[in-house]
Length: 89
Image: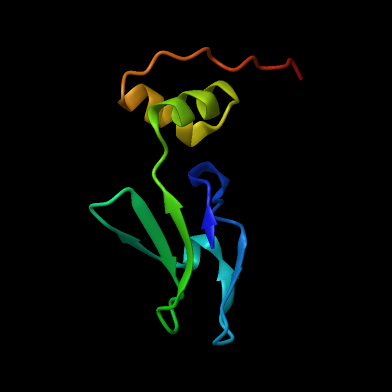
């Protein structure tokens, strides 16, 4: 399954045909030199999902929408973005 980079959440539920079930953070990550990251089952090593690294525009859009990881990435890449507006509590 291919998902958007910022749609992955460490707390999302992941399941595998081998019977393993857990959270996204419990999956094994494999990085490639290509723009693809895969998450694997820690029990049988099957690929559970793939994500493409985001483009600069996707990082900027997600940062402007308030995604904390995107904000960190935007700052790391020195991208200009409109800071998300915070609502008073």
